[in-house]
Length: 443
Image (tube, rainbow, N blue to C red; front, side, top):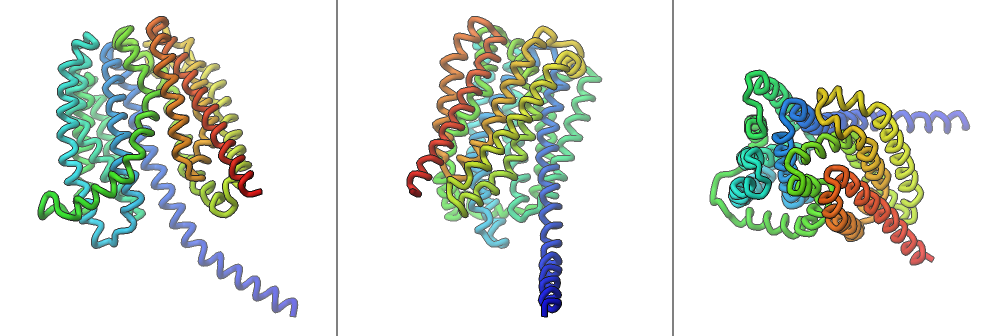
């Protein structure tokens, strides 16, 4: 009888694993494609930043840094109102209705993009008076053309995930990356490279890639421009995304305000110096974000099963692992800062090498607090994240303005360190507080 029981158990296990293998292969394949897709876009942006730092004069690179930070602000608003709600509402539509849903979003974006272009266009004319640099005005003109196509390209890539087909997004990302890097090399070789032409090249890459992906998605755009479906879609997206807008702005503020402060107080070239330093933070930031996408559902599942108290130890372990990784990165960057700086920038911005360890501290602090940020999202406390971003943003403004005014780029890096420290302490304390309150309520 024992042998029969053993045999039945073995048969059951083998059948379970047989059912599991196809699902595991499916998700491993899709997950790998998704990571590659994000890696191609993040890697291309990082590579473009490095190449422009090598090939543009500091004044032009500073203009690019200022303009691209404005684009990141637009992208943050766009993600809050368009992309994040797609992940929530999109799966609820049947396949036949999903094309109408995507078509409605295209109509909404077609209207929303007009005031954005007007504001950017006007900003390009005011930039010369504000920063006394014609390069900033031309960079903003390039951004005015590029921004709508870059945002639509993000929309088409994101839409493929509704049907769990990241391969479609990846193909567009690969084409975009190859076109941009190759195009930049050609522009530099023939002497046409500038922030304006770099943004024009982004426009071409996003336009072609986005058009091909739209042809594959086949959104339904015929009919009335604003039908009942489009109005209903906008109301849902606005109702969901309006609460993310303030947090998106506050999340953008600590990382980007110093470009504008340095450009205003010290000259546009100094904004380029800050960008050259923060390029060191970008790779570890993208890696942290990629792992956070995997860890957030896991912590959320623990919250559903065991409550907030059940997430406390795993979140602490994640914080510890991120802290160790951040310190290791900080040490490695510090030891080889001179070699890396000269290799990346061909001798430019060498006067800022001594600030690399402090830029690495910013990366380490941002990593160390990622576990608590994951925890607050997983236990459904976005208001606590909002408070933490408020504290970090207020520090950036209140401390950053006098520091940059007095010390220039070193003051900007010092302000970044302080705002990152405030963010780290805030999220760790707020998550611990939420867990303590939950534990007290349970008893």
